[in-house]
Image 1: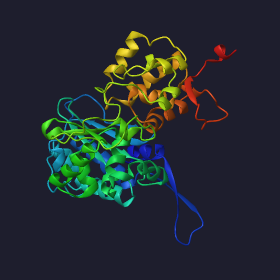
Image 2: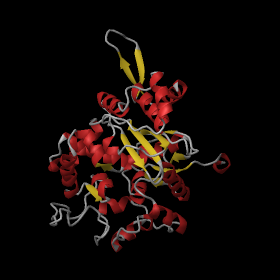
Image 3: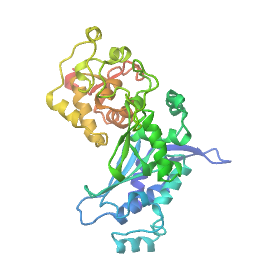
Image 4: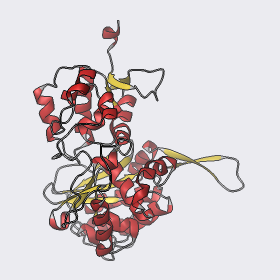
Length: 380
């Protein structure tokens, strides 16, 4: 157990701390050590040993995920409340006796409290009975930093509360949010959180996906791309059901892309197929390009909001093998925010040598694009 925790902590990004009265710097993992201990213990204690699959610890550029076989015997909305339902009572007893685990049923609450004390997002938990899997996710993101405040300024007319801002940041980082996660952020009950989510849906920042108790919300294009204004944007008419009549770049909306965005896109044929084509005048100004291979287009269309990062990275590599793509182009094609595209996919692909910068001497260039790294024989 201790070796497993050590391996995880050694791989986590760190933050620099200086203790009072000391001039020596101390490096601490971005996620508190106690959280890692509780998460790993929880995975080993409650996993299903009838499934021949290991507990997986996956570190992404913006988060840590711990996946264990076996869905939660306790409903996700009840996690953290007193009481525990153990799938493996003998293993649980041993872990309690050896002090590896604390009081029964306290692990989730401890993780939430320590993440809150570290000014980090509360952990999110997903139990999937169909896939027989439980996933705990821990974001590295510190809330309301300078970049977040600048991003939230685009929505100042919405008069967002701090709770609403945190919910939107989580939706941007993870591409989804639900009632249970929002309760962790706000401390409100289910009804109170439903009111917040309804407001964010009605003003066009979240899109609701109704599945009874499993209802969740995903960010709209208006939330992910606040810098790009759609022609005629303004107050939206709200239907009796509460949904705006028009969403930002709504899939059913007829019309065209705004001029500013069209000028930055290399080819209209590479945009998501449901977006309207560019106007004739603009299309003449855009460099032509051959369409994507049919299989690649189909794979992109099948891509879901919660697809595995490895699956998305494969598609990015296939795209960037055809020609260099900018962050904005990839975000439009894959329907994710430019920041999410970079933090979750591009950053690790650059680090692993899969991709390289088109303009290596100017990483922050607005014209920066990414291509599959050339082999030495190709460079020669």
